[in-house]
Image (cartoon, rainbow over all chains, first blue to last red; front, side):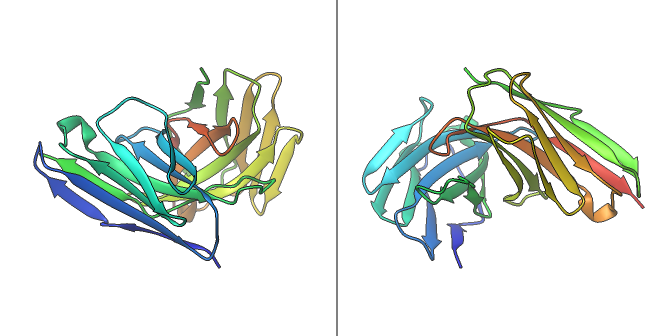
Length: 114
Length: 111
């Protein structure tokens, strides 16, 4: 069965510090991968998606970047965090070619920038 | 630009009541629509997915309908239980999993 991992679960970082959030998927190959951000009491905003190694599409201009160094690894990064980067970050995957196109979500990382 | 609205933002009902959550979207050119459940501080769990060619999907006490032409979907929960308390999110999928989410409806079912 497929599983998706995110770490860390919680992170408190000062403004201006770097960031690296990691997401890995097990039990599948060649998935589409997604990074979402959720503000308190709001829905999810798609930040990045990837259809393959090294292929990253950005949905919104922002202070963050994403990379996919391996097929089942998706990393969200920042060189200098802003207060507005605080939020709940969710990684998701989907089987490419899956007619149902169901997305499966990880447990999330809560980021607080002080 | 696709916009998704969920009404109400919050709902509190006594246990055993049947209830309906609403989702509306502005662009009917969708691939599918998905309902998720989110418990506080947790990730999302998929409940039901309706393809654009379908009218409804059922899973246990849950029934989701889709009227693509009018840009509406409803999630019907029968015989609500305290364990149903959570935030319910509606997501419209354009393609390749690029989804637009509503802000959710937070449901509280009181014992």
